[in-house]
Image (cartoon, rainbow over all chains, first blue to last red; front, side, top):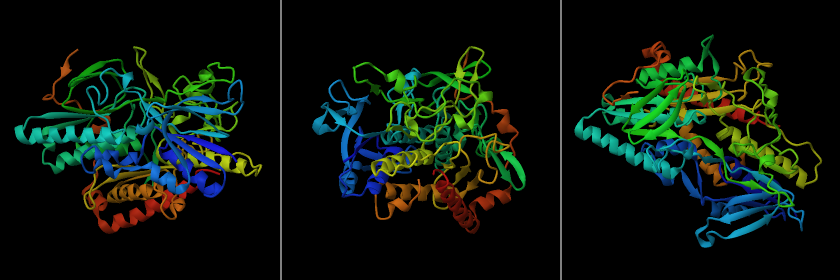
Length: 486
Length: 56
């Protein structure tokens, strides 16, 4: 009997758990164990709609325990605190230490031995990186369903105030640090706020500002894209800037947020100038770092620095040698997501340490690094989870095959960025790119012009709505769920 | 350093100021149910095919 422990039950961890259990068979002796501090699964892409009050929080959440019970997966509502990849001085079997967050066993500590480990712990929302950032301080967030519910309440209060007093207001949406990722989510929230303000008839009273660490609009942390548009190559920058102009959204680019005071955001720009911008409502996403997870060797030595990058993300089969932007190569990116020197330990989704950014990192004259982090959420994260457990399933079954591969430099991704909701009035930017990490050896523009597309319209909104229902259906493990691709 | 108050507009970024606006025809196409139904099928088929080529 083999035991696989999956840390985390987000898109990559949950995909990994369902796919592995299906591959091994419900009645097999092989155990699949999921450890997640959260009782619920959250379809995070729809938090955008929760954050403007178009959807309730419970529409993007469902409890994990009944799904895992039905599928024969063991679930521990707990957080992992330490990985012991070589066991301890008595028993060389690897194990993970967990601390329960389940109210029935809150604070209890347990050891779970394993044969295979998938680290899919996702990000730690690092609000502490920027003083005053976050829902506990002076801005709101849509990173979790509860954050989004809180954001919606504050946004609705702002709309009510404008209606009541007619006073001019400023809304800032963007990222709260120079090293943030998920600019696409900030983009979505911006245009959903725009639409809600228009629906409420108060758009002319609200200045909407997009504050981002991207040096150009349309960068999205992937260095932007080049599309074929009616026989001409056009950039995601032009395409995105057109939408900003059409909707009258102000843009402040290349910004590192230094501090958020009540009603005032402090930022530094790429040219080194600093600015202070007053606001009435600010949704600023936090930077991410790895979860607080230690690695301990059999002799008790702390090997966290060996297994994890300084960012807290787990090192896998990538090329981490430091090199300048000009020497970055598609081959730097991991293929199997297995940790070097720690056989049968994998890290997927946001939990793996990327070798470097995808967008060009920049430094201000004051020495501040402004470098959008590479996105590895959604579709790529699901594909990585699936790939890791396909390798594990092969090994458990003794198939003797090489590890499965899914490099982000050979992987396509689709992103549907909502720009407003409603079955007749909705809009979204539907983007596909291949590959996610540009490969300038293979493609002149870094990506395939044939497979890298962008279009804006109602069809994008329908697709975003379809993905909401389809992925919640899949995550619930309903009949034929496995036919739905990642 | 001065705080830009709420009643003083923020200067627009030059990349936005010089970006082309969509024509009325483009805006109509983005809302046209027949055209968008076709785009919906096309986008989803493309996404499905791309998802399948993601790993081996």
